[in-house]
Length: 76
Image (cartoon, rainbow, N blue to C red; front, side, top):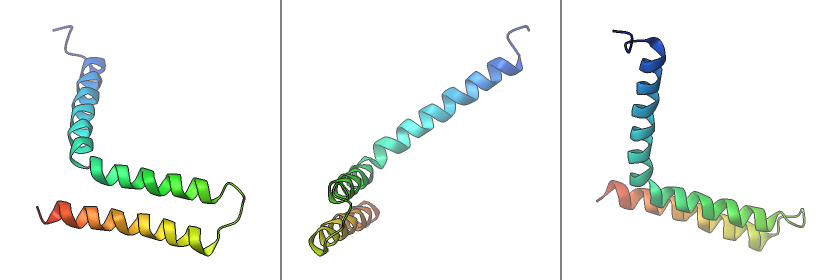
């Protein structure tokens, strides 16, 4: 019974949580991709330290893409 310890239980919990997170990440991958696109647009826009109206529109469009992907996932 020396294998039954708190350390081994903690390892088991960590493995189970990691597996669950992997399954969730695969399911939500399209939304995560869209969040990445928004972050890239924001980083591009803030390189010069100013946010123009055109850059704001591009970021807003990318944000709306997140919403459209989420709606498509729900209506599948």
